[in-house]
Image (cartoon, rainbow, N blue to C red; front, side, top):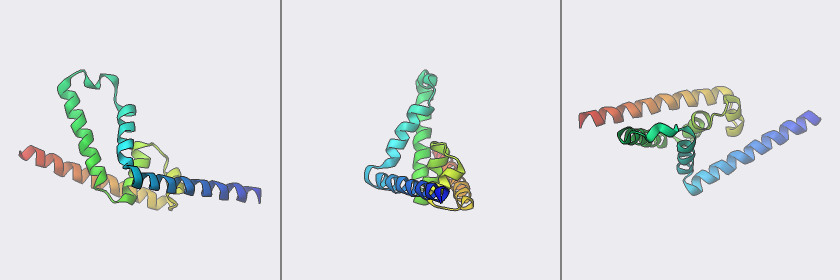
Length: 128
């Protein structure tokens, strides 16, 4: 009985956190906050020593986020949790209340869709 209580509490807490994240996303353009966090944590300090290189990196980041924003909300959330926040597949499955296989397929599908979007944008840029 004690294990069941802990498991139920954990599931309840994760569902609460998931719902909170969804509400925050809807209310405050959550992707902008995540983008700012991503910029702070994933850029080396020497990234902008060369101004041209800095402009290219910023443009690439902007393009990636535009691509992420083109994904469905379910796939976008899975991609952000896995590839931006670094959560494990099992954690994502609990947070999103989905089977592990569904999480893995959404992340895979999202990565493929994102790659296609980015390729199309790159080809469009090269044609100019």
